[in-house]
Image (tube, rainbow, N blue to C red; front, side, top):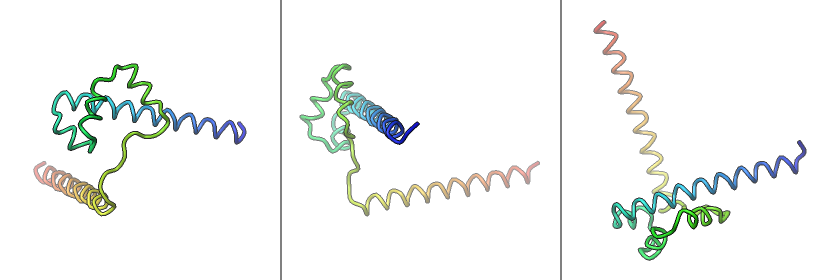
Length: 111
């Protein structure tokens, strides 16, 4: 496989990944709009009219839109918010590790 063929494979894989993410995002918006419109507004940051339009798209239209070649969703908030969320996730992971270790130690003592 030459460089051109390899780059086309990567490009095609990237396009497929983008389409899959877009499909998931659009179907998520449709479901959330039907279940809890206010939550859809809050979670997505989109205007109500955009959510209304997405909610009424057919499966064919969602599929077509998902193939637009760009990621339809993006990060919201600033870098500080992102870092805080990432830090909190690491802290929660450490707490889970400690909890698991404590449970394993406790089980070992009772055997």
